Length: 245
Image (cartoon, rainbow, N blue to C red; front, side):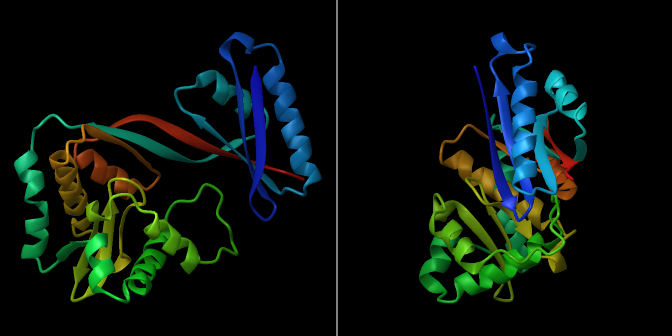
């Protein structure tokens, strides 16, 4: 009929999921489950509780808003279906970067050729994520741990399709069609690098026979990149926060 689950994102900040089958909605079940979730969060000492609701679920959004949850930000979901158009332009994206002195390589290559790739990638990732949108920012946040990033890279699907941009031997950007996403070092932003890197990644995915991609981002800059490349917003996930006593 329904379920709810509560977990701790970080000390004293919690998130929950709640779902009720359509047949059993509007019977008070969701309200009872949410009351239990909120009571448990208080028992555990939560100072904040986060909910996530898609913007095309009007009743669910009204349900959660009535209970003191307020919007923090939105994660836009985008879809691009490959139709064979603009293939040649996308295939030339990496060439255009190389013409500007920016080398494009892959995670598979740097693993073999650069014994310091983990440290260099960690520096890039740490710098790039500093101003990423966060629905519930942690004022005492610490950088992502090196070992966690290493696990992400070790587990990366198709490292031969995980692209890394380098300038003067410095890692400045990356994109992965299958996981970690796209990011550019702050010193190299607003130069069209993310757009070209992502376009080249799309061309690579087309050559591999993929039919499209669904992805999501809360970054206004990355949303503009996706829209430039023909992605269409299909819905947004609204992140809402309720302050707890």
